[in-house]
Length: 447
Ligand code: HAX
Image (cartoon, rainbow, N blue to C red; front, top):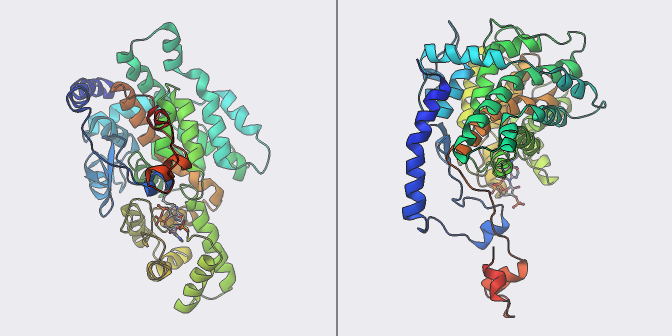
């Protein structure tokens, strides 16, 4: 049986030809245009990134390598009797585009287990953070401290062919992915459960179950972890975390620099941090309601009060999606099955019935439907992870699977250093005919 790395190399050799033909024979064909609104408005919708790992359809939601989330959850191999598949299998799928067999996943699990050691200095870095530090800042620094382990850097310094970049990047990426859950669990225990203390990994457990064990959480938190890491893994390449990882890696910074940067991008409240914001907002609602469950009118008032004070409704809206996020739906179904009477789930459910109509009436958000973050904190809270500052760390562990798979492929296909062109507001005004003064032509054309 071929290892994941051997299989990946076969795929890389096939794919390189496709990219070469596209570049050499069709490199000057136009695939998109850019409007003023796109240039000022965060480059929404401009087709300017290429990835085969995942694709986000506005109406359907995410597909990993062509598979919808329900298909991924159904078809990836699972531990005996489990509902949620092995996360290790997802890595195989993202990298190769093929659903792995149980044997292939077993082989990969051994590889992951061999890489799942965190050097002592990483723990020292975590331990040395001052109190009040956000767990995402600690995670980012912990990942950064591992940079000295980079195989890519060592080989690059010795002189390495561009055709071999992918190989040491694969080694770095797989080492880091295997360590991320351990780092996350260490941060959790350090910040919130020092009495339980640090647990060493259990070699008999898969990545998700071992994470649950190291967090000190009982079943079905292993299922929750597998579900969580899988649904957060990738959302094509333009979102802030994925794009940051890709951008930083495009300068040939190694995966430790790129992943730390990805984590920093994810830590914003408009992106990954929205999951903690949702819980904070829900807790605010609960406190306001005292001992009773809100009526529909009270819910509507809470939502309107948030909007009228100039804040966004966390967990709703999306830059690309125009329907309920399938990642929300996967978690909702899990809640309906395992925790239908959970107090906070009832709030989330009740809000789902009022928020979309209010956002429509409010008239700003292009997408009034819930995104992944509207549900994810609720599941964590139910299983005892009530420290909502930590939720984005869980997102980051999941997201590293997609970002790192992309970086391996970027290196394999020789994707270029990212360098879009900026222009000044004066130039923009001239281009649309607001100003008539002449602007030197070279300023409009140089790169
Ligand atoms: N509540 C209130 N207003 C909202 C809104 C919401 N949930 N979503 C969008 N809007 C507003 C925007 O702030 C914007 O207002 P201005 O014109 O005053 O700037 C307007 O509607 C148009 O925005 P849009 O085009 O619909 O959305 P964007 O692509 O600009 O932004 C966001 C997408 C996800 C950032 C946005 O919907 C938002 O702020 N949502 C709440 C935060 C959130 O849940 N973030 C997580 C998103 C999923 C994710 O990335 N997870 O990691």
